[in-house]
Image 1 (cartoon, helix red, strand yellow):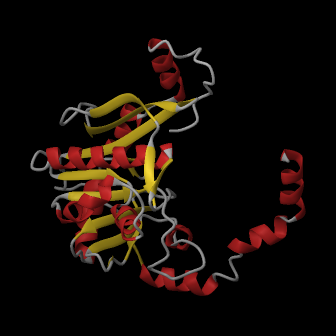
Image 2 (cartoon, rainbow, N blue to C red):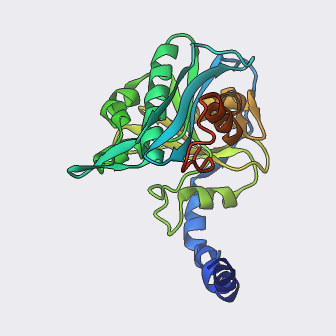
Amino acid sequence: MLVETFEYAVNNREEILSRIDFEEHESILVKARGLWTDYDPSSDGRSARLVGIDSSWNFVPYQGFYIYAVDAVSILGDGTYLVPPLFDVNLSTLSVKSGEEYISSPQLALESIGMDYESEQARSCAGKADYILVDGSVLARYYDRKRQKESSFHETAKDRLKQEGILYISKKSFSNIALRGGLGDMFYFNRVSSRPGYSSPFMDRSGVAISYLRLAEDSPCIKLEIPGSAEKSDIERLMDILGSDSVDGYPYVLRLAHEKGKVSHEEMGKIARLLGLEVEFGGRQVLGE
């Protein structure tokens, strides 16, 4: 079907791209411009000790089980761990509950373990850094719990929302609750300005303040979630802190955490060989991350 898929994409190019027709979205872009404030971060007197937290996972499928590895790390700006990392390597069916049955879902099972590990790292870092930066959205995970999506992390989501000094930062977001457009809010805010700045913070019904930031000229926006309320002055203060420790508009400690904790396909292959399972009947290439 690969050739047919390419042919379909070419033949229907205009219809597919009409979903991002700027004229159609002009009213939402106008709304986004009204919520956007250009602001150049300043590092004067805004130094802070930041730690970045991220998790990673990967797996190799065999007949009847998976070999998997999952970890979470907390990294300071000098590349060292603030607290010891959490990790696991094991064999499992990686099943999750769906209704009254358990089904194999390695991505969901490992994502859940990774988020649990992130939560543990955040708790362990409390009081040891000025701000704890966690990769991803806590709201997306919390609302997955409301939809009864399987993950043990969601049992502690409310407690995680209450932790002070913790910021959740997403490179990608598909939420449209700020602008109510046909596409995600980040799409619109990315297009209203190329200057550093932020969108007016607003409160989610779960008690989390949300703002979209651009920390450097021409860099993509990031989504910031802050447990509790936040005013424009709070966002500007945080931009001063984050901007001075960012590379290409993204916090450096989160970049380090991603690189330090990433479980690559190559590493999963090495684990399989160390366990003597690289020639196991039915083994396949690494599929997840």
